[in-house]
Length: 444
Ligand SMILES: Cc1ncc(COP(=O)(O)O)c(C=O)c1O
Image 1 (cartoon, rainbow, N blue to C red):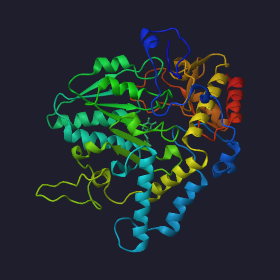
Image 2 (cartoon, rainbow, N blue to C red):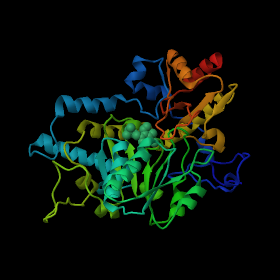
Image 3 (cartoon, helix red, strand yellow):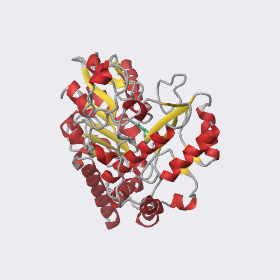
Image 4 (cartoon, rainbow, N blue to C red):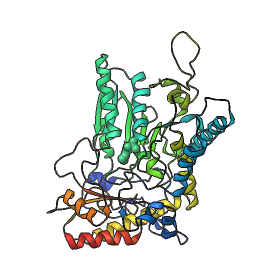
């Protein structure tokens, strides 16, 4: 019997499955709250806040795992900056620039609070991909030695996997041979903890994992992974698909690095975040250097490890995008906060899954269908036996329903891996789900 709220159906399958005790990392709402929509929440009212839904009321955007739509408040912050507030930050002494620097630091402090961190551990990047690369390059390049091992899952997003493969080949050119040790996904769609136990050695230095899988939509058991790898192995967590969906707290998750993009949580494109555990700052080497940085005293070049920003932010930042991240946080608060978003996404996922299940011939990917989970994080992937997923995507687009198909940014795409991914967010309506089901039912 599984004790967790996420796993209560008994599925036929492996022993691993039967013995697994699943805990949801981050905040775990009580089981009953998963499927209950808060009374006060009005999807119509939320949709009013997004210009795109006013102009294109009939377009159904089901590709929210790729990027979210933007509320007017986020758009306003970007255009106000470009129209009236334009200056550079941390460069000049005039008031417009100094005020801007203060706003950027306020935004940093807010983002830090949002993930349970302190401002000096947070730096702004261009997105999750840059953040994940920075972990490999600023920590990995400076600290790894021949024989050291990095654990990762080849079925994760390319941005989680490729930085380490790239680092491996870069280090090789300098005579340093590190090993990439793959871990497996369980057939349900989350990491097979047994494979992490088996892969662990006294040379394991870091495990790179994602919080919620971008195709299978399952919560990965980060707390369990920490228990397995212990304190000495660093955890680099890709929170691209959990941020803005549910509480993500670096202390509770006990991770060393955390990466995410703003554009997947309502902000403008071009901003991301990298959190670095404070005690690791001294181990990082800057990767990109230039304006805005302070050279540390001494004959050899180094940069003060005072904060993640002093080490890793160089040159002019994407200021409007960073400011828009603050507006995105305001937006989430204004609709009731992450608890509301989390419950709504869970309810939508359960609803979509139960309606899809009624379609003849549907074949679900690993994920909600296989894990017996009572929760969901907005992602359901599926296909039909006799219809190609690309044909299905064309058909859906002709009905104004936008979904994701293709390689899904996986490094290991095998035949038959292609699924239609439907990913929702807080503004998704039941009517949109019903429309999808109707179109699928009449065309498959
Ligand atoms: C799990 C995961 N990691 C990383 C990324 C990369 O994000 P970005 O393209 O914003 O850098 C994505 C984007 O789809 C993702 O889903």
